[in-house]
Length: 170
Image (cartoon, rainbow, N blue to C red; front, side, top):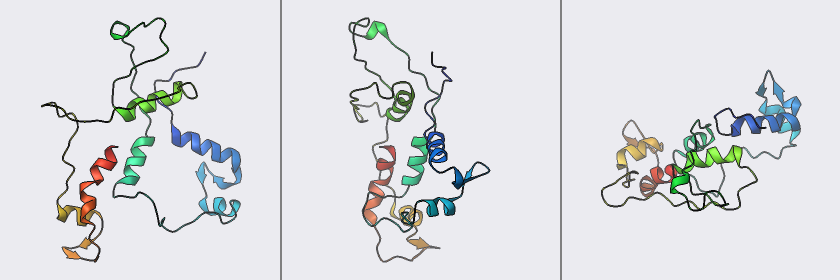
């Protein structure tokens, strides 16, 4: 029987263990020596920014949040379910990211389909913020396009300020 520790999968720790298995010589005192890892990969690592891709301010923090283990619990509600004893389908209600993290560990390889109903606001029940517009001054400072009040970039990507928080939430 599988021991349950009450936490979702620790994806970072699992990735590090896989790297240790593949490249044990790239580890010194339980830390990754990236110079050694680069040598072991034969120069395959690209160190410059990607030219194409979906990038936005806050993407790194959003990824870190997604990799943080969850300590939530999924509780069944047989009384709200249809044919609880025989069904092979479950409906889970909760925060998308937290539920996915909880399912990842216990149900890895066992789930055929997950349908995620995206967050939306209806009526007066505003669970999620729906105004993702940031003021231009704050946006320019966060994205490093101004310094000390003076613009240091000729490309002021103003439209990004409307999408950053929304992309972070998704």
